[in-house]
Length: 353
Image (cartoon, rainbow, N blue to C red; front, top):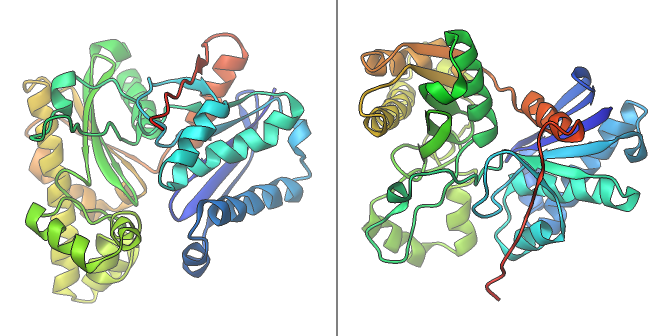
């Protein structure tokens, strides 16, 4: 069974071709920032990424009709459950009715490749998977609730792996997982379920996102910036990009090694905020935490992870699973559906129009 997995991000796209459990090819492409700025509409952004996908397939001598299914990372598609969903017209309509988000572009690409062939396209572990405790969604404004966003795909895969390493069933452990990438969050798994996730809208900033701001300051910014500019500072142009002019932690560390004290303070602050976020997860578990896991690309930085470790290891042992296993998680999820081991759910969108 041949499966194409698509994992689009804000500044890159990752692709893999697998035959059953065996990965045949993989490619990761970092996008040109100037091209990303040019592709400032949904149509242009999708066209740009689709060209990258088709170039990958052509380079590997594959055509869409060679694949039994395509699976994409699920974007922000409303409150859904973790696991597999079949991509349908309702899901595409939701994406059309909501602001552009890079993760959602893969949904449209996967559907566009398979639908003409009458073959299935799936998403797996959507960013907006909702298993949270209802209490944790409340805000101080009646009728306004916290959105259930997190790096579901990688953190859930890592939590499963942590359970395996501990020799326990996934549904028995309590584990806090922080995904350290262009966006940073911490997701809290209690007996196999995501009870809450805290991220850049709660405490800290990340390489690309500005993080939580003082409310009065946000009000001022709405008068100084356009909606598009405001969206950009929380989706690409905020965080390290705003403070230091780069989204690369490796570059920041090079500055630190050269004696740049401002760079050191900024990066340590980002690590400190991650640690604070993880400490909040210990409260969700009433202190009963089996493990803390740091994952994502920035987990390759020993300096950064040690800053976090020294602040949170009093809570539970800290494990590093650097990088991400999202393509593997996508492929394995789709394979389970195709083999009949898991059922893909049907997406329903109740438009407010």
